[in-house]
Length: 191
Image: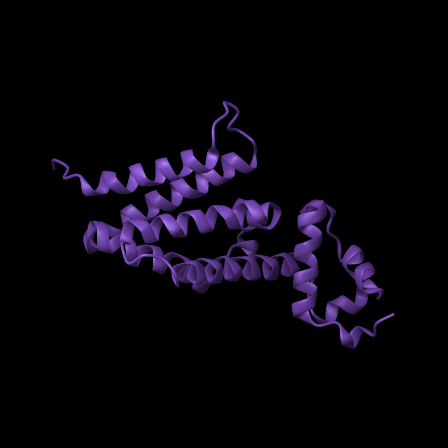
C-alpha cells in the first residue's frame, strides 16, 4: 500500500482522467480514486479540496493537453493558413474522439467552477486566431475564429453523441465542412 505522501497531484489528475474515460464522470468519487492508490480517501484532501477542485484540475489538464497536441501538430504542417487550420481542426477532432469523456467534461459543463482556466483557453484560441487572421485579416479574425471553433466543436459533440446516422465518412464530411467554411471567408461579401 503506497503511503499518502507518495501520491502527488499530477498522478491524481492523470488517474482521475483515466477513470473518467473508463467509467464516466458520474462514477468518479474521491473514494474510488483513493482505492486506485490503495489509500484512504481523506489522504486525498492533502491535494484536492473536494471533487469539484479535482474536476477543475482535470479540465485544466485536458485543456493543456489539447493545446499542446494542436501545437505539436503544427510543427510539421504546411505554411498555408488554410492547410494549417485544417490540421488544427483534424487534431482537435482526433483529440476529442480519443478522450470523449474528459473532452465532454471540459466543454460540456455549465458549472462556472469547472470552466477552463482563461489562460489555457486563450492559449488554445490564439494559434487558431493567428492563422485565421492570415486568411480574413485582423478585423474579421475573431468572428471567423468563433465560427470555425463553433463548427469544429459542434461537429465533434454531435459525433460523440452519435447524432450522425445517415452513413458516409464523418472524417471526410468534417473536412469538407471546415474547408467550405474557410473558403467562404475568402469570397468577398457585399456590405
